[in-house]
Structures are given as structure tokens and as C-alpha cells.
Image (cartoon, rainbow, N blue to C red; front, side):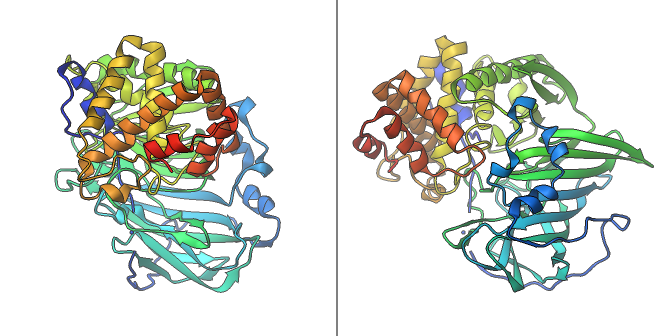
Length: 532
């Protein structure tokens, strides 16, 4: 993600000031709520009967995921050995958008296998839109069943972003269950009355754009025997999630364009509605953007279709945006490893407190960045390169963005430097100098300059989040590359990518790979930069 801070660089590099400010995260408390049983939001919908199996996880999760449709989202040479993927869940989602695009109804069937060593007495899901920070909307679960048995959904956490389903019958290790949920939500209506939000769960009336990020209940990550669930912090990114497979049916009024990750596998008309079905391939999230005002432009690189969904007044820079992403994809495919999806979508939407926000197979760009500014000529392309890099660092190789935000943000920022180095070399060194200047502006009396700090370390001084995590983080990789040499550095990155593809990697997975590849000790170097 990219944010906007207020450090003043030297005048020539003023363009980069807005490019580097990121998002926020998470905390814990318990509020009881009554179980609300209502009529189905989709009265005519029939769902696959609930399934449960002992032992053979892949047969159940993959069996419920329509692998033929999933493969449609992937380049033919990137289709995996499905049984080898670290999959514990499959989501079938139904979304019905209302005419004004500010409210919706939803239904979920989640096939989940307990891959933990211990039995589970409960399941925890996240309801991120309820957070006042970043989101500012609502998401309520009205009905929950596990293997056909009604379960009381109880919201918890101080910001109501947690949902616990307590189970009478524990889910044994290796056992598969089906979770069925009905839910509804509402977007913020404009950002002016929600100053701490990003615009990622918002209806922008003037532009006619509805952005639905984390619109459905998503399973929390379980680690070290505990469900990982804290309130949203409000700095940087907020979501840590496992890779899953998604098949999503979206019902929307006609003339509304719908943008999602993955590929469209079906579209039918019914009365006054269009019904779209999308399949994702292995992804961590499934955002939806809807509008009747987008103009679609396309290009292609390495067999990947780049789709740009633009709003009025930004036409002059659509081609630049697509070309930057195409060039970035080509560079990163060569240096890191192949992008596996058939498509990458760039969506121009109104945002605040963020210049761009990344999701698997899709990223959002702040619409105002498309307005030409002679003092900020490289801002748009630099942010697009950064967000494109997040397809590798966060999307394909996951990490804990709350505890270790540097692991994806520093790598994505460094990756944008690689794009500049190859495609805009005259800009590269000036950007490195700007990073150094922004780091020099950090008041060490107020916050440490160690790049390995969690998001919450910056709660009292969020203005230093970007200089430390993004700028100093990128410089760490610049210096590491110089320390161990080009060939060793990129071999290590390629190994890190291939060995952690579709997983959640720890910082040690990354740092140990550099030591393993260079056959050298880097402990003192890592300590100097504050990554261990």
C-alpha cells in the first residue's frame, strides 16, 4: 500500500512525498450479541448440502471448489499441483448489490479443514468493515450453521471486527466442516464524514463508484494454537489471511460494471439484473468494485492481460498507468518468478490517506493521481510499480502485515526501485537519495529507526511509519544487494518466492534464505538495520 506523509524532501524530489504512506492493523474485547434468525437473503438459492469428512482434507476442500473454474483464472503453465497447496478453506460466496450500491446482502459456504494439531472448540472470523478506522461501514451476520447445525454468532473485539462460533462438537485435527453464513452490509456514504477511513469500503456519490473490500466474513489465521484477532489499528494494512479458493456469484443492477480478482466464468441476464460468476485461483482476499462510470482499456505482457478501469478526467494517463504495470510485470517476472494469474486489474477509485491499495490480482489507485502535475511527474508510475510488486510480496508470498509490515512493504518499495533502475534510470538515484533524506528526518527520540517493528509501534507517531518501514526498509535491501552481490541476492529472492508461494512466510524465511544462498553470516548486518 502507499500512503502520504509530510516530510519535505529537496525540491527536485518533491514528487515522491505522497508516494510512501501505508495502512494500519489490529487489538481485543468481547461483546455478546443475540442470534438473529431472518429469512434467507436469497430465497430461491440452493446450496450444496453440508459436507463433513474425516482425514482427507484435499478431497473435501478441493472437491467443493470447482477446480475447472479455478484453473480458468490461471495461466495454463502456472496451474499447480492442487493437492500440494497449503489450502485449508474454499469460499463459495453470493453477493446481491442493491440499486443504490450502498447496501448489500450476502451468503457464504466455506469449506474448512482443521490443519492444526489440536481439536478446535470454536471458529473465529473477521468482520473488518465494522472498524471505524480504515473501513467505517457495517457487516452483520444474521445466521450461522456448521455442518447444518445452527450456531450462535457472537461479535467480539472492541471494534466488533471479530466473530466467534462456539461449537458443541469440536473439529478434530484433519476433519473438514462446512460453514454456512448469511450476512448483510452497508458502505460508508462518502469519506468526508469518515476522516480515518481509506475509501476501500465506500460509495463515492459524485464518481458513482462502490468499493467493497473485505465485504464478507473471512476466517482468521490460527497460529501457535491461537486465533489471531485484534482490533484494527488504523495504520498500514489490517488483514492477514490464508490463501483460499473463491467462486463468487454477484447479482447487480444492469449497466453496472463489476471488477474483481480472477476471471469471469459466466454472465447471465435475469429481469433487471446481471448475474456474474467469478473464479479466483489461489488468493488471500476477494474485493469487489462496482460502477457504471468506468472506461476499460487493456494491454498484454507475457501473456497476462492488464485491465485498467478508469474514471473521467484521467484519460491522458491511462496508457501510462497500463504501460508502467506491464513493464513492472515483465521486470518482476524475470527477477522474482512468474505471475500466475491470467489477468491483473488496475482500478481508479476515490481514496484518502492512501495513494494505492493492493489485493491479489487487483489493486486500487487514487483517482486524483491521474491529474497531471508537473511537480510530481513520476508519482503515478512509481506507485503503480509499488502496487504491482505487491502481487509478489503480500499476494503470492504472504506475511503478517501487522507484526512485520516491513516484510512486504519494504520489498515492494525496493521492487519499485528496480523498476526505476531498469526503465527510468535517471530517476533511480534521486529516489534513493530521497529515501535517505526521509530517514534522516526521523526523530530517534520519539521512535526507533529499526525497520522490523510492528504497526502498533507507530501509533503515537504515524508520520514516521513510512520513512522507517518503506524508505529505510527499501534501503536495507539496496545495501544487502551491494553486500552479497547481484547474482546471490536475486537467487535468494527467487528461492524465497518459490519456496513460500501461496504460504505465509516469516521474516526468518526471508533472512535465512539470504544467508543460505550467500553461505555467509549476516547477523551483524541484520541487527544494524533492526530486522532481527
